[in-house]
Image 1 (cartoon, rainbow over the protein chains, first blue to last red):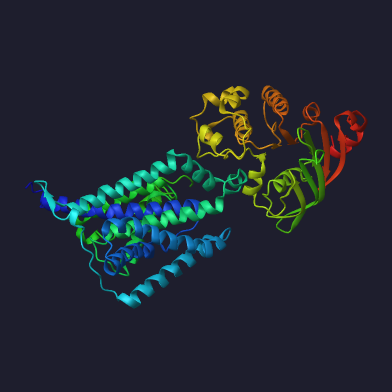
Image 2 (cartoon, chains in turn yellow, orange):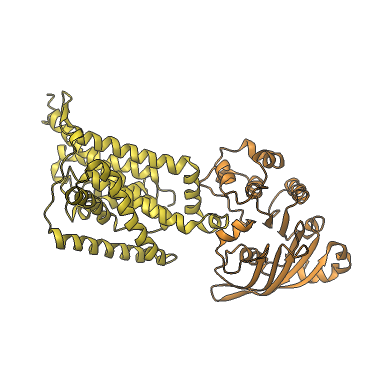
Length: 295
Length: 235
């Protein structure tokens, strides 16, 4: 134990771990928001509710159908993505060409309705979701105890984020996606079915939120308001990273989780506000965000 | 049906919001022809190309391509019938590199040029494959904009002012390219301000004014119509 400003390394690493875990969720959620904003020009306020739906989807699979964590990791994002694509086709698509405020209002209203429905049935209390058998226990690293499930969450989120970045920046499909983001009209005139691409993109972004929800289920409890609590910070992350930037949302997500964790160690009173202080500072210096393209 | 035109436009009307810009335009293009659309700025040339491509949200009348009525089809479906546009602003995607730009338009039919054939026409592109689309010179952008629609197998190529703002040596290179494309059997609809340049290339001319086709003549009839043409083009 090395005392540092009266803080043990034990406490420091424990909070860094919590920070990384939060960062993993920030990254997955803000990545989905960035992909959706780039393509649909919609600030998806329903993102937190869809994250919560992902967690509840996994909970239902387990309690009603006895389908465990590993299948849920695939089925819940898929199920929520299908729900999202129906929402896109029936509602969001009608907002094309309108001011941002309409998309914001619609998705915010959707979030309230979805959360209200879940609260009606489950109240505000949490439902437990067990850690999968394979990931129980942990490892003593000497300087700290690392629970296996938390290590898995960080590694898996990071892998999904990097895979998404690779798919968008380095593949043929990603090139079509970037082209449709930049100039949808011309991309369509080249024979690309842009409306279908938009629906699939929304489904993918929403699926990422649901995936984060499943990952979160064994760590936090499955609660109707779990997304509402998180989403405010996630939007701050998006603003800091720069709206629509893929790598920006990944890096900023993890970095802000860490900054939050460190603040808990050194000045716990500011832990809940530090993200917003960073946001204000970034907006002062770079109004387009750290990785934003346009000023 | 052997003599039926590849593209036949009749009574075409198009609107930007409330403003009515095409007033019953009509034209025909036969397979293998190069047809040039002439006219002053604002006469409706670009709007005509965009209407044929399905990019004008408000349009009515009739556009038949290879026997299919396309007036109500979305632009991705029209592209898949075999029409490709090289837009006036070139439309190079700045977030894509040259290779990604080149490979972006999906292949819709066999018979398109291979990448090697495109590099033969535009050797500069081969050296700049990894460059971001936004970092190209005007000439390179135009080569890329033309090159990327040659791969797809589209039979009708529509080029909107391909020489605008380019150096004479590049304008010549584009002329040679268009001749080679004609020899390969492509049908080309050209919009061009540079009338002298276009007169050496095209088989036929249409003159547009106020959203309508007001004159049509072949290149053989050109000398006899020179005065009338100058009046229309205001040169």
